[in-house]
Length: 425
Image 1 (spheres, one colour):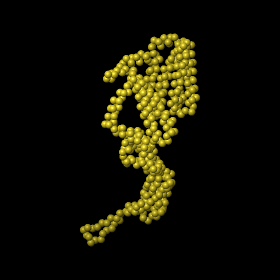
Image 2 (cartoon, rainbow, N blue to C red):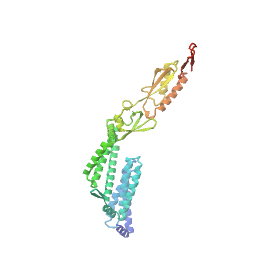
Image 3 (spheres, rainbow, N blue to C red):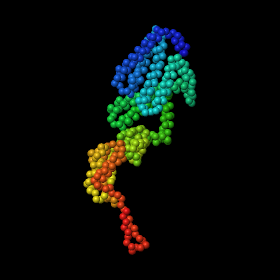
Image 4 (cartoon, rainbow, N blue to C red):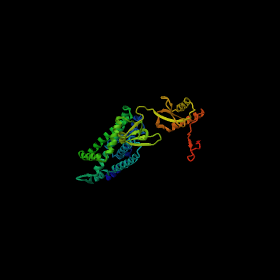
């Protein structure tokens, strides 16, 4: 209690403080040296070692272990103050580092991680202060005395806090294990990106479910009561959540069948683009102009989808031009294919080819076919560059692009004997 802490302060002398200070510095230096030695070749985003060795999880964990051992050794022949304060401080630091490092690694782009980190930091430091001054046991006893009624069951506030902390701890460790498996094992064992995605999602879901069940069991929750919740969930899926469940099931089916994969160019309805990610509920498709569509996975299963990359990664593009009937056909075809071949993005195999497609009233219509391997970089910009080169080539060769011509006959209905007037516009 607070009186015991005040009595301890009165017993502390300069000699005892110097011994504890030396022991504390030695413990911190030893922990830093070990982390420095083993963390030399570790990546900067490592949860254990961090970016600067002391900002990882291993440093406060080793320092806590060494300080607790030193505290037990020193308290046998003198009062202990600094090491007694260091233990809860380092324990709080371990909790903060564990939650912060794991959440930043698993959710690197989430804005909610910073808020969770600050909340955990405040709670951990408050608990450390209460522990140091001796107020933590009476606070926990007071929370244990406050009970809440849920039907015929009475639960104390301390039990609720213990359950939340246990569940959060188990879930964070589960996320850490799943992220480690995904980075260290799946990236080397599974080369296909889609299969790696479904494997990581399945492992994470299984570990989270197992960890949650362990956490509930640890705080005394009867798991047989979850059967009622399972029945209610089944009714909900049958009534209002069937679309949501269908999207999740469809996501796993797509990843397992690999009918479409990350990186494929697809066309869904009128939207065409490259698949950038396949989530468990939806798929992200990015068009060449930068627009991104969020397509529910059920739509990809039940509707018609054109996979433009399933058989061949090459992508065909066309452009058309109409020239006068007096133009040389072979010369026009050579100008068109040369304009396409001059572009770096156009593939040489198959080579660009031009066809005489139609005889229109205005002239001969030629269609140029060419292939690219990177349609995600844009199609209109490449087609524009080729059209400009075609225009320059035709002008240099003296070949005119056909212009629309129409003949209009005007007849004098009142005087049918008069000759018809033929006017060309």
